[in-house]
Length: 328
Image (cartoon, rainbow, N blue to C red; front, top):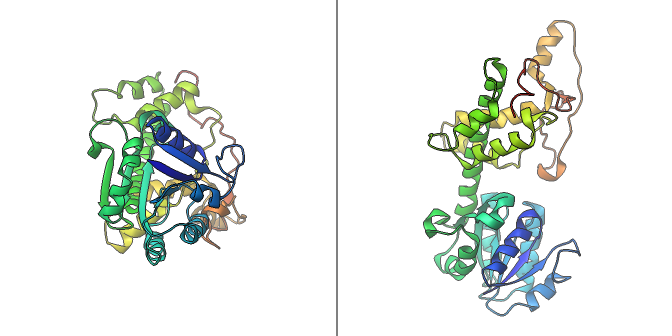
């Protein structure tokens, strides 16, 4: 099968390679000349035989919207567009309606696997009409892990369901990561514990908390014992926020994922607005904007409150972390 792939970054580039290894032809386009196979979207489309399938793997929001609109002008009835980025599920209905007017199919596909997906395969969550999902099934089978299809792929439902499932997946990921992180901090705080990394490694088989995330934490502690030099400043891609917003709209209690999201906000602050109020009562007040990631935020949206002071740490060991040297 032929596939056009737009966006050849860390994920897209590896996905192109995995699909090729499965025997399919992939024509890739990227803004970076050194990684692309063709120089324009027009060349990409002209190099594919009808019915064409084009996978969009660019940043969510405006870049994806513009790319889908361009493809709507270049593709023909019977062709198919797959959005494999981290788009908001509400955008999928707009993309689908825009392309449907021209007889072009649309599938949204949440993709999980990160930089390890090239060798291990990717978890795929699709939304769309059954005939469109079936049209791209050879590509989905090439990308997913080996083994039963249902253990690495799901047609989750209607248009938008794939990105909705990926949003919930990432929200769960926030909670899991933070639970491991809190366990790490408590282990490092107790002087009688001499091998923190060994504790996590001992949990990697036979225990109910084993997971790939746990394996990755062990790997991180092997590479950077005690996590010395690692700043606690943590960004978020936006999907955790969307998950919490959906929980509010649907009246679903979500204390763990919400707490994990707010902990990320806290990691970017030296002192929070609430603590500034406490300080003001002691006769102290002040603060300035924190570092912003404008390309990941809605216009005018702040990562944290304006009066939160910017994080100044450079990843120094925490006070009381007596085991930094022995953790590895």
